[in-house]
Length: 253
View 1 (cartoon, rainbow, N blue to C red):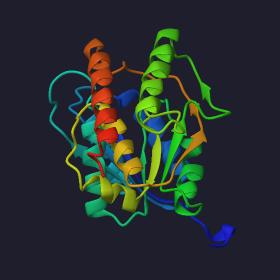
View 2 (view 1 turned 60 degrees about the horizontal axis):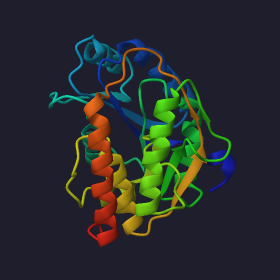
View 3 (view 1 turned 60 degrees about the vertical axis):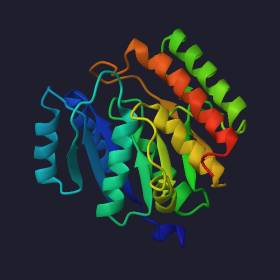
View 4 (view 1 turned 45 degrees about the horizontal axis):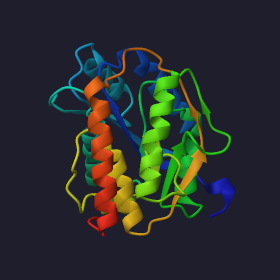
């Protein structure tokens, strides 16, 4: 494909919970960065009570590229994994996009990196591209030392259990081919929590997909509060250990 002819073609999964304060800016940024391309933004709401759902409906009435999926809140803590799964299922059933993107609405992911990540999968041979906090050239902004150390330890565990070449198993900013998304649906999701992000990688690695990491700027939160509760850390650790051991045993092959 000639460079000048390429245009972004992607479906975005954007899980939200009480993100009204950041969504207007985010959706405008996405529209600006993907202007001229073919894209759909699938906003998956997990039970917001701050007007997020109403805002997305209004935005979608003006911009048909933005759609809302509503999920009922199931328990406490972060349900990022279940929202991701719901979004990719909807995009595969209702669009023909060749690339799927997982994107957070809290300001940690940069819309300026969208086109480059989509192109890495669409044109340059990767099945999966992770916007990695630990790739050379990446920056992590305004994250407490405890969070950084915890993330390092979490990813070290997964590197030992799975593929040591991958530095960042936990960042949710990812780009992957339609075929990679379809592969995921062959396996029932084992987790509603962010552990599902690790399970996704376990499936892809077990099937020999080409996974690359891209430098990223991991930004600071624009507004609202983190959806992670203290028990999520313990669940995340034990869940990651379970997925890593399942990967080593060949369960995902």
